[in-house]
Amino acid sequence: MIKNKTSTSEKVSSIGERALISCLTEIFKPAPSGKEGPAFQEVIAGAGSDDCAVLDLEGEECLVATTDMLHRTTDFPEEMTPWQMGWMSAAVNLSDIAAMGARPIGLLMAIGMPATTEIAFVEALAKGMKACAEFCETSVIGGDIDTHDELTITGTALGKAKKTRVLSRSGAKPGDLVCVSGYTGSAGAALEALLGKIEASEKLLKSLLEPVPRTKEAQKLAASGAVTSMMDTSDGLAMSLHELAKASKVGFRIKEEALPIEEEVIAFAASPDKLLNLALYTGGDFELLFTVSPEHLTKVQDICKLSIIGKTTAKEEGILLERADGGTARIEQKGYQQLKAEGNRKLKKIHSYKIP
Image (cartoon, rainbow, N blue to C red; front, side, top):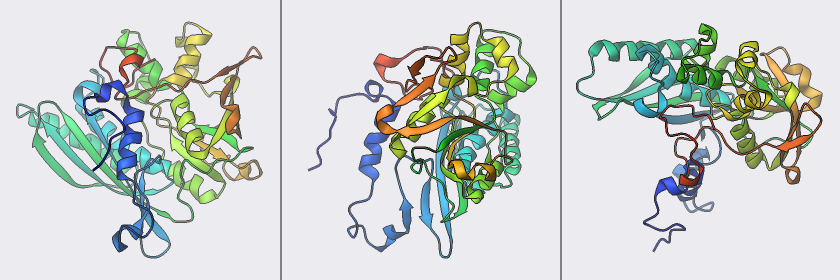
């Protein structure tokens, strides 16, 4: 008889996304070594904290695989075009492949839609998927279609990497530098602009509506041998820091003044606290958060727009922010979550990248 840790009548809304993922991971994790049979020897990393599962292939390479589901009412801002929805649904999956330092080799897309959906809408959706896949030097290799009450898209991305170069969230060590590609807070500012009907540049809006998976940069970072851990920042920088810290069993000390924020976002924020909230706690920036051994920093400095935002510390120190005024504050574990615990809901408006 299987005993559940939670009550059978308890609702998923009472525990939230992260707790539910932990529960399911515990169910799906392999039994102790030797009890699963030969087939499971091919699984290098299964259900767990990383962005992708890792499967053994003959030779020096491994296969990485990930899947993600998006819904019309909760994941696509109303202003999104069908083409942009297609791009986004491919990008969320390909960004996970990037987070492992892998090379994308194919994308499977399953689309559920109301029977009344116009053919032109579906064609534009497919063209957006194709454009994002081709940008990442891969293609849509198959999928499925079905009728559904609302537009629902599930993508499965596959990639390859050398076994010695595949990256995870668990390799950071005290003393490593904490780096991030691109900018932080741009997608969050773009969403606020859309919700508030505030004028914003096309570039800023594209950061939300057409996020760019950093697949090319990630492969170069992995090949450098300098990166000790990595993940993407799609759920927000603060949430990603906590996930990385948990997997690596470390702490972080982040400098507020080092956070890479675009000038338009700085001008958009009404106060320093608002700006910090955008930079730390809003999702949608599909950038790479990674740690690097200090002695190998020169190997990665020219690979992408890279900002050193802090350093890795002992787990006991927690995740701290060095404020511009000289003080320190704890970085909270909050950001975008599809399922938020009932006692921790901040917004009722249904949009993908919710602002805390």
